Length: 272
Image (tube, rainbow, N blue to C red; front, side, top):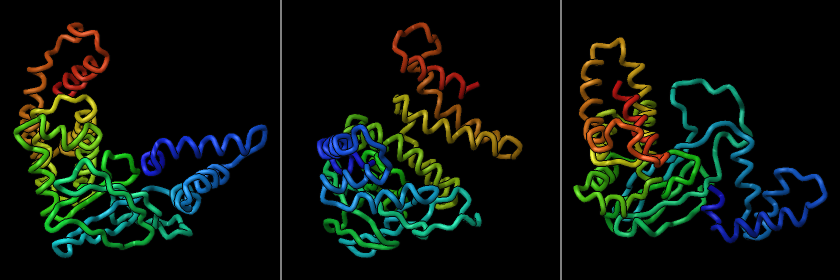
């Protein structure tokens, strides 16, 4: 996360500063943050201590408030939003978030900012939609208003896999699948929205994207196994798995590529 936010060159310079300054000496995490602060001119120590001195991670909500502005709010992400958090935090579960996002029309251009308060605003070109945690390097989840989710879903489910994969690299496709299914599990979005968004899996063959999907499907399988809806869920699984099983086959000896083998195996295990 910090590497992506600072840039690889500045990150390496910070590591070098840390090692040169503290060679043959004892060192702490504070010394590392101070080295990054020195080479970047940013308060990295203040930022990172909000991550290392309190538990969990945040969820960011991006909500359009007018044609050119999104309100950005953060809160402590909990799979059970009604859970009673008894562990106190001197930061009141507010993080200094190195936030990276992009807007439609320029999805390959990363916009970097730091979120330091519960609520802030970001500006976009008129009527553009947004995509947060670009490349999914950040340790946080992102939620959106319904209209923005629908735009992301429409573009992920574009009939052209070349266009889709160009706009959303593997990390973003995998991260978005994991985000939306966990957000549905936690009650932030509906499962109707989540399952509609991940329809693109029927033409997706990347191991890592499917790994995120199958991990979340395993939770649903367990939760629904004693419910009347379980039969419908299994039919859904057959429908979404069938194209990839037909494409990849079940003969794991047909390839020497390790990732391809893992991909076949995860589909076979999920189908059983």
